[in-house]
Image 1 (cartoon, rainbow, N blue to C red):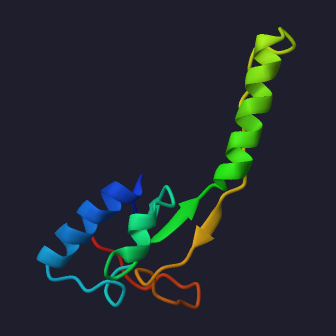
Image 2: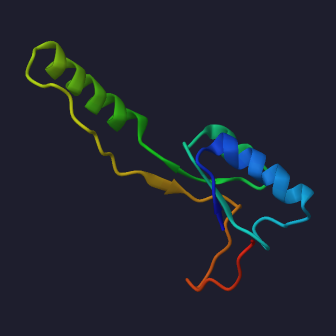
Length: 101
């Protein structure tokens, strides 16, 4: 499996894998991170990890207001992402059987 740092990089990785004659997801699973809508329209669609934009906006506004009022000096925000399963990942039994070097 290949986890790209972003959906955009996953598109590039997909192209390189296809040019290298790898089949997605039969030979290798591919995922990205961002939750971009383009990932859904790719063929095969890219599995991606996304944050809920409404939750992100809510936390951001609350943090900004605390900063403006002097109630906070900033903090690290952690939001639980969710996975949008696309066609680029194969179903497995949890056992890794091969790796690309």
